[in-house]
Image (cartoon, rainbow, N blue to C red; front, side, top):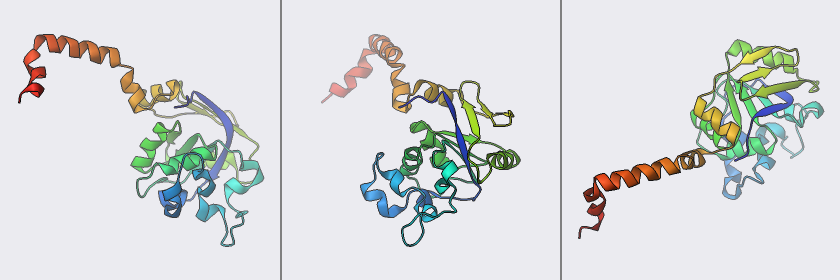
Length: 209
């Protein structure tokens, strides 16, 4: 998994609440979904009009926000059914950090498995960040520092966010849950060897016919 230590880029405000995983990655495309192509259909109901052309009013279609790396979203972002493709699609669009008042639980956890940082902040703070991000310029840069757990806005305001130590370490080191477990492989092996010597009969149970 790719490390995420610091991030600097444009933040796109998307104030709509309850954007679910089917809006992020429509079910019609899941059979052929991959990390490489899912972004092509991400936010399709919002990004495109009925004739397939781009919706000029959707924030990520506006010139200043096409290369946004941070998304400031409405509450309960990523709710709905469980699908990791929602994070694949967002990541494929270049988004590495999503800020919202609240998230769907499974989406929130899937973010960490794909080197995307979800930040929960109070509704008032999220609204203030959206205002600073604007909706028509896209020229201002936000900065995220995972080690210090801080977000710095274009005006210089510093916002601290919560991040569990294990999640923080995983992002900083670029480790998914399996890789985090393997970090302790030597300790696990040492314990097993010691326990095998102390209780050999436990390990012989599998050989009983």
